[in-house]
Image (cartoon, rainbow, N blue to C red):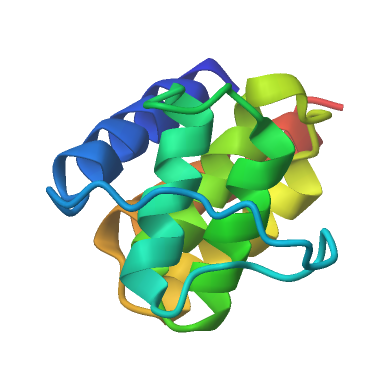
Length: 134
């Protein structure tokens, strides 16, 4: 899995590099924890990145995944890739879950995110290698 982690880390770097230069700030609304306070995929993705990097907010992997998942559902492949990274590396206190990571990478790839496709393929290759070695 070391190769997956390395490639996924590269994916987060690319995600951060493509992040909008605006600084959206999380709101303190009383919405339920399932709801997000962003109106576009880009603003949700930016908030997710901020929550995983600690940019102006306390690092919180669960909030990061919530915002990235919302952006992913709105069609952002790079947000799907970012959520996969969090699950693959257990970032921000989130429990490591390779199945969720694979699901997010698959979604990223279906949405046309090339980094997500590369990460998905690398993870699938590693799984196949592990199965052969049993």
